[in-house]
Image (cartoon, rainbow, N blue to C red):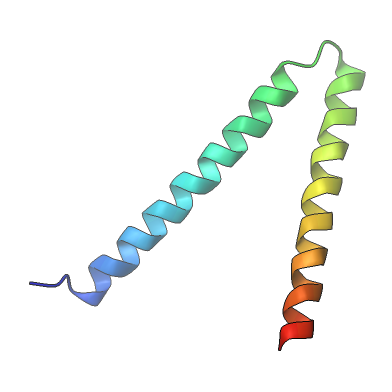
Length: 66
């Protein structure tokens, strides 16, 4: 017996939320490990730059593949 579509949507939403929370927790752990306020901000900027670069590369790839 298969699950109703609403259950599938809820399961996908829960999985996405869990994945996002794990990612945010990992970033937070990295920021917490920084020894000074200045290094916390520098690490935060690096995270932002890396995420933005990944998003731009993926968007470019998807545009080129249609």
